[in-house]
Amino acid sequence: MYVATLLTDPASPALDRATVEALRNAWGGGDALWLDPGVAAEFPLEDCPANLWDVWAEMQALKVDLVVQKAEGRRKRLLLADMDSTMIQQECIDELADEAGVGAYVAGITARAMNGELDFEAALRERVGLLRGLSVEVIERVFTNRITYMPGGRALVATMRANGGYAALVSGGFTDFTTRVAAGLGFDEHRANTLLAEGGQLTGRVAEPILGREAKLATLEELCARLGIAVTEAMAVGDGANDLGMLKRAGAGVALHAKPVVAAECDIRINHGDLTALLYVQGYARSAFVSA
Image 1 (cartoon, rainbow, N blue to C red):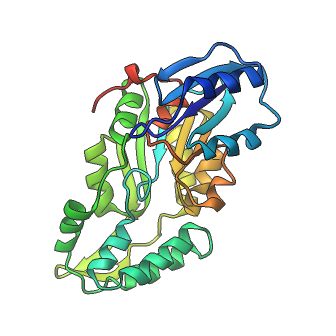
Image 2 (image 1 turned 120 degrees about the horizontal axis):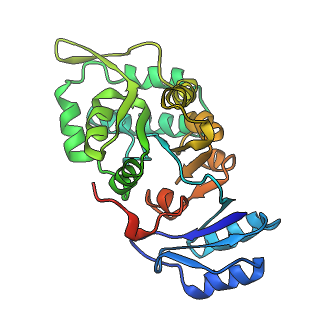
């Protein structure tokens, strides 16, 4: 058995009953269940529809995300999440670079690296090099004044943990930010790269080895082994090319507002919903969400 989930942005609900029922009838699905009126609904299917991606494109035009997956095992026991542009709405290195006066240049490199056009590790070293001489005090100012959480993050982490899940933040960014974000959102642990500093200033270097695509994948497998679960019981979420290893290996890989090259390789693509979409696709109703 499969289940089809339709969802949209909770901040501007765009899912109506007619749309859900029309698709349910077209696909011969079972009774629809509303997980959150106007925001998310699901219905069971016997098979995965052959025209899934054609219908997915039609739903995108309505600002509705559509996910079809096997019903069995869709609730996960591990959440492995990227940070930049996933759990937060910014790229931390771009914000630091803006403070250093090279924001536009670094943002261009970041965009190309996240789209898979540049080697991630080389691109990170180049961008960090441009931060040389920046006061470490800027980090706190950037976090306080520039960084905002992606909507739904606290509910996602709190709900999965309350239901026996483990949550890990794994980032190609920096521990100066993952420490704060993990604490703010309630993650069990976090991993990232370390910016090196001397005399209260950034040296323009990052500690080696760099945490990139392969390290994120290794973290997924390590955590599953430690928790005694299969990788099929893990959900990974990210938006950039360096997330693809863990997204393709996890039981549920979610491309959240992702770069096109990333979304193209994932079966769960969330372009309109927020982080609560990861709860809806697991079958959680809004009434079952846990407050942080």
